[in-house]
Length: 284
Length: 342
Image (cartoon, rainbow over all chains, first blue to last red; front, side, top):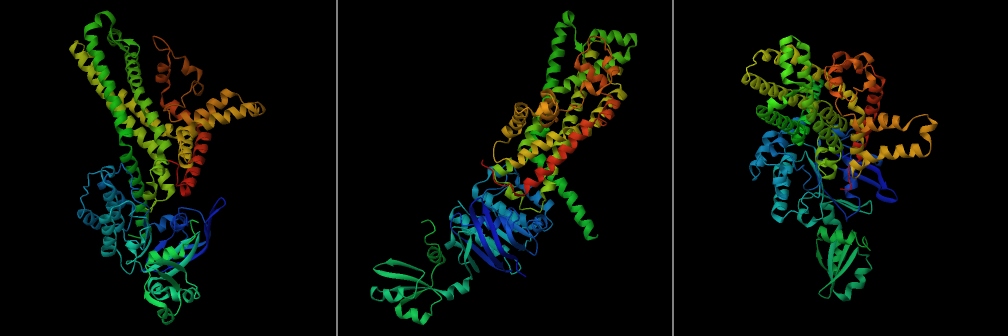
């Protein structure tokens, strides 16, 4: 069963279309990156999945309709919406007690064990913590919940590289297993591309790429072409072309590798390059 | 234990946690504000008594409109009732500052209850937990209607005790120990406290329209809940008057003022239902010794009868129904209104 299944998911704000007929299937045990430029509809999609916004079309999360079963859903779905949304007046110890009190799948022991690895003290209030520590606290609370689906919306925005690395290492090392699914949006794709199993590109409210990382490696190829072969490369309809050191780099989708190898040196494109190629013209 | 049982235990615990959360966030407003007011009042009483030590010969001490010397005279004459009402009026009177502080606390608590967490985006954290919007909003209703009044009442009762202790010490120093038994008449003090406790749910029902209106504004507006909550009723009044709607419906501006604006914005005032209109002429005519000010009326009409009669007033229940409807609307808007302009 899909963890998230959407058919014809749409949402408009006045005349702006935020989501345009999106079809989506997210399978259990995957780490899915939802990537798109600002205003592409990422947050709208996550809000629909979390039952925080109305929408048109069909959407089922863990087999439930998020509009009508949000409370039940939240027993199986966790999310970190953004950095620093923990209330500033809350004490760390009270936060642990509260989540333990209202969440049937929360493990106090796990949470305290995660916190013991940080400098956070139970008597501290959130407002006394640094941005990075707030994220550590939030992560400790969320990781102690045995949820089926974890949604992360720009969880490391504004954090330094040490906190960012630690965030994803902890998530991968201590939380993720094949029973769980993680859906994450971020602008720092290059930092998470090695942990993703699936990639979703969203552009102007539509899903423009929905592929596993393995597929991405097979489908897409980057070729560095000398000027004399550039025209024959262009004839193969590359997704994207850029110039470097007098050579052209072409990005191809689904072209036979043997043919591409004749044109020049083959590379596996980075997700960031793929992203730039897919999103060209977005801000134009 | 069956699954249903476990679920229901968890959900009643959940509600207790939600109330705890309100208390954590508003500890200063709910607990410290009335407690500090009580301490300030006791401090003032202490200063008054010390001052009286030096000036009593010229002025005497007033207790509930009755000079302390006359209290002693009355004790001698066996006018126990008069002394009791004097003490009661004194106790009720000195409770009023706590009542005023309570009104401000609850008013601004309700305005911020469903807005502040949207303004600082922490609503996204609360919404990540398996808590329904209904539970969340109802916890805030209960915090305003019951938790805050109970804490204010406890502060008042503690202050009453403190005041009576101070007064007893004063009387002992002045060699009138006979007054102590009267001062500490247990049935009498407990009757006063019982009336205060019984009034809490009555006040809560009366407060529902204000609770509902402020929560609705708090849940709905994208910015400046105070301005909306206060200005909107006045704008409606002005428009209704301007287009002649009030006259068509043969309603006066005064009616709109007390029955709509007053109920929407000021029903959290404790004993707001105790208008002169809600009592029999007889009760209003009870004269108590020196003068007939509102305080004395209040003392004499603060009877169990009057509290019970308040529950038979149509305006009590019409307001409660309107309040419940606005609370339902606040719950509805809580579902999807997450952004604010803050």
